[in-house]
Image 1 (cartoon, one colour):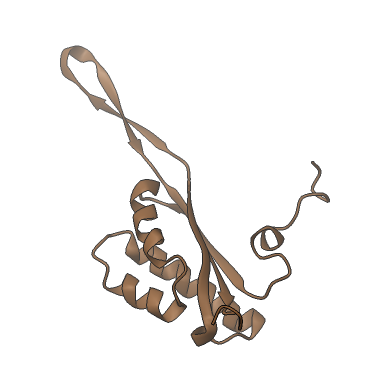
Image 2 (cartoon, rainbow, N blue to C red):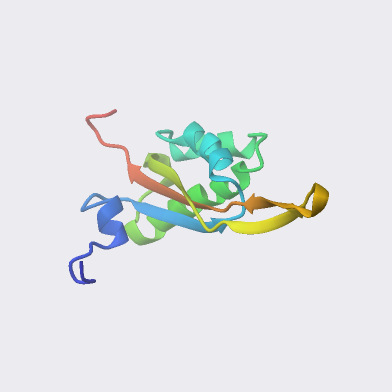
Length: 132
């Protein structure tokens, strides 16, 4: 597949629908732990999602908060949409690069430590009239 045939990231995430997205790459947290937080806000209104993330006890709620806020700001500046009419339509976490470290063990052996990273993607869209 050549570059001309490959759809843009916006086309693959949104198509021709209004909305915006934001991506945080190489977040140094395990994707499993970040997915727990992302599952909380998927499908919520943006203002409710930001409030939930602000008071969530998980450490992963801080980078997810930043991505949701960035996607909202992108929608406001590029699409001219208001934050009150947006909701989190898609939110997913992909596995990023894994750093491999060595931990010395008994009898001269070693075991591997995996320091995982995540890519966080959030898509916000305006609420439709039929869904309301």
